[in-house]
Image (cartoon, rainbow, N blue to C red; front, side, top):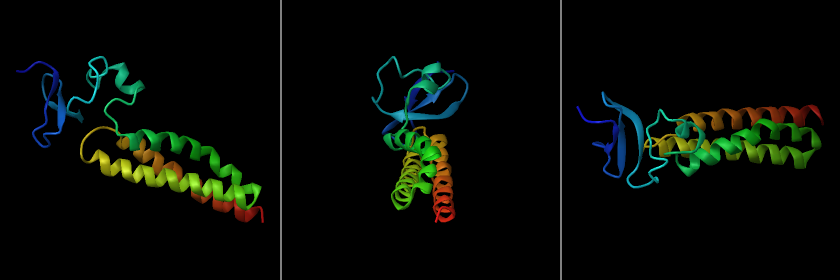
Amino acid sequence: MAAPGWYPDAHNPRYVRWFDGFQWTQAVQPVGGLPPALAAGPSTTMHWIAPVGRSWQSVAAGYVGLVALLAWMFGWMGLGGALFGCAVGTGSVVLGVQAVRRATEGGHGRGRAGFAIGAGALCLVLTVSMALTSV
């Protein structure tokens, strides 16, 4: 058996895949993409704290999704607030969809992408309902 570590991915030569010592995991990252301190396996604390192995789309989608959780409240402030809420919600959904597409090529970020899509859709629905009730 091979030792745990990052090995060339059999499905995509641009990525390496984590072998946990027993089986291949879903964790992949670009070849040479991370400094050694961050290239530890997906079971490390650093994997959950830092955006290790995630695309910029999934990282951005996660943060825009967090903003979307509050942006819908601007809908009661009139047209400008409603436009802001809709822009943030739409941006969150678009980045989330892009992150899902990117994650299919390898890497992490599906969870952040799903969160962004859900938060963005909720933001859009709540912004529109808030704007309509304040008219």
